[in-house]
Amino acid sequence: MRVRDGKDLLTGYGGRSTEIMIEADQISKNFGTVRALKSVSIAVPTGTVLALLGHNGSGKTTLINILTTALAPTSGQARIAGFDVCKQPREVRKRIGLTGQFASVDGQLTGRSNLLLIARLLGADRRAARARADMLLDLFDLQDVAGRRAATYSGGLRRRLDLAMSLVGRPEVIFLDEPTAGLDPASRIELWEL
Image (cartoon, rainbow, N blue to C red; front, side):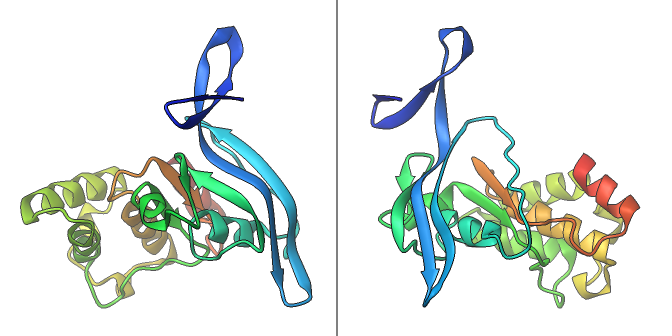
């Protein structure tokens, strides 16, 4: 591995260098006497899709929670887009989008209002927030239900809205933690295509 401008680089095929976007180095996490993670290391270059596969309880969500700054590791270090998840959590959060195991939409708000809320919280003015919401509603085929309260959405519609919400801030890194959990087979295929 080489370092240029303070960022880790991985030499790829053909002599190209690819920036490392997700890096975990010897990450461990204990919950009392339970060891959830033991010395996990990964390096994920820009533009890569990485899937974490493992049995229930194998630590996948724990690792995602550490990488997204929700949990601190017991030991080891992790960086997202070159920023330390423990020392620079705000910088990390500016660069990530997260869709968790369960849709985290506000059921009392409309689909459009959920997107507008996130955009405004991320600092967009009203005009930019509306433009981003409209673009994501189109992308996720939610225009027809945009004015309905999210509580009235089917499971598949809620998951699509949740994924759209994770993209409002144009993240450099997107974490998807079982985004199709609880969906029927047709809805799963549709969501993966999106």
